[in-house]
Length: 491
Ligand code: SAH
Ligand code: SF4
Ligand code: F3S
Image 1 (cartoon, rainbow, N blue to C red):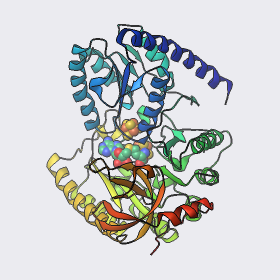
Image 2 (cartoon, rainbow, N blue to C red):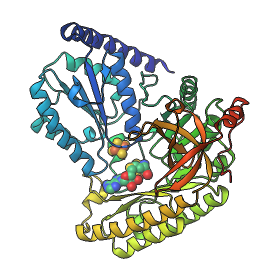
Image 3 (cartoon, rainbow, N blue to C red):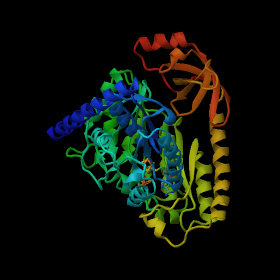
Image 4 (cartoon, rainbow, N blue to C red):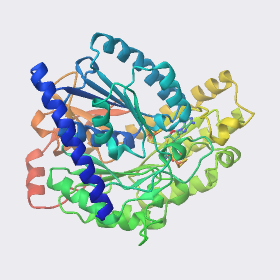
């Protein structure tokens, strides 16, 4: 860790202390600690950022709550990838305003990708004047400082940076799950897909040093984590710009060697950068999960080119072929956009053809949303809404049909699941995640949360299974002997 990092970290620790004087005074006045509620919109990156924000709030003396109504400090960590993400934030802000009228000392803060858009910040300054604090994605590590400034001020505190080359390590983190965790391996994106706002709001690609990543995972494992999800907008280009370049596959090899870590996932892989070396590492590692999220976006070469995705339909199909050949039990999921400017029904037929041929285990389908400042938003051939909806519905029914067929293949098999949580509807049941990322609900004791068990997948319900636990005792004996439990199909 370099000196600059330590200086920044110490500065933030001083601000945390300052906040603690505020929270202590609150405690005296109200007879309880102040409560904070962090609401996360968007992707896994934001979820991980929220854990950092929550960690700081906790150190500052806040108690955490999931209910905005109970909170004395509400923080929205926003997303702007599609317009509906923005609309949800504006909608909820109205509700916060009415809460603040009843509780004038309620502090309202906004951060995340949406705040990196100038027009959004201007709108909030003008029409949402009850907001107390706004900061962005590049200066999130200064949250303690902003919080302290905001607590000491009646005015709206706004601090947004256009970019950063800094990565501040070792901020406090409050994990949502004790047995699994996201781990950032890189920030930002250099790909500039023509529809996408992420490179503008998250900045240029910056990789973390492998030693920092490995050190963080080792500490997580010591703290009880058995599964990590390595996070980046395009993990396949990890490490290229480091002083001592390293490939993502090489990083994975090193993560794979961490003792006590049982499962490794990663998100997201850009098809254009997926290397043979990565396929080989996946093939030979029992820890790397049998799941790959490989966004297709579109099946028509013309649209792929306009999207600046830099692969063709045939190249995508050939890559999938290679993956399935090397790792036959791999589950492949994807993202697809419908209604990109100029997209015709014949183009969507090409996408549907890819869905049929690949047989995705799941596909997230999105209606194209023009984002201000991106090249696609300025294209003059935007597709009429009725055509988009018609094509979207056509695609969705094929996606659902193929996903169902894929899921049905595992019915009756016995597989290893990591128990994630107690079922909300029926506390006698728990939910487990399979290596291929599918969920299974089964009867089990809540003490198994965070443990690996073998489950028979009795019934497939399209996107999830119901099942029953089998032979847990022999399984624990197995792991006590220190052997990896094989996550291949058992029968
Ligand atoms: N870095 C990741 C994805 C980030 S955004 C990747 O390259 O795959 C997640 C998904 O949102 C994208 O895969 C894309 O399908 C979708 N998306 C991004 N911008 C969009 C837009 N303007 N309209 C609709 N969907 C969009
Ligand atoms: Fe957006 Fe493309 Fe970067 Fe993904 S790779 S974040 S879709 S620009
Ligand atoms: Fe949204 Fe930002 Fe993630 S725009 S999808 S939260 S990187």
